[in-house]
Image (cartoon, rainbow, N blue to C red; front, side):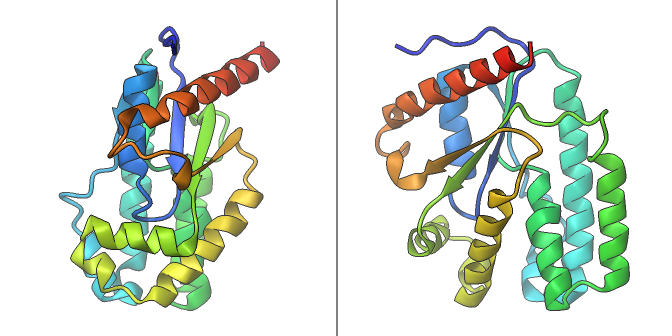
Length: 219
């Protein structure tokens, strides 16, 4: 049986493609680990629908909005003693989305430089609360796109497959070079928390072991 860790302000961030199931996984894992959740808020985002209709017009606005919201949420977590799981990392915004739109020409060089300067000043400092572990959810491209379609958000289902193909390749390249905190890769075929909530049990044990090992190394 899994034994929950004592509250110690641990932070786990979940990373992975849009629609791959980060929120569902984070919620199930938090229940097993007895962590609190910090979930990405989609409702109330003033730019998301607009962005999918016109990438060039709204990419910068969307990225600035996400940066501010994730920074505020991470600051709130850092001020509490409880353990938390986030269903999206702040690093994907700059490493995947902003870079992709800049390189594809849907974000101007001036906007990209402004965004990256803000990111560096806010996040890449000794004072920012980086995760103790980043869990990277991954699977095949077809399995990932199937999950996007199952989720049923109209603006995502109408997005060309080529967009998801490029994002998929960028995620794989990004995670291979990510060194800000320890990383654990989890294949989406290794669990099914929708039909079998207990399938996350073995992963919870593995995750807690890695957190303990990391803590010992830094003691």
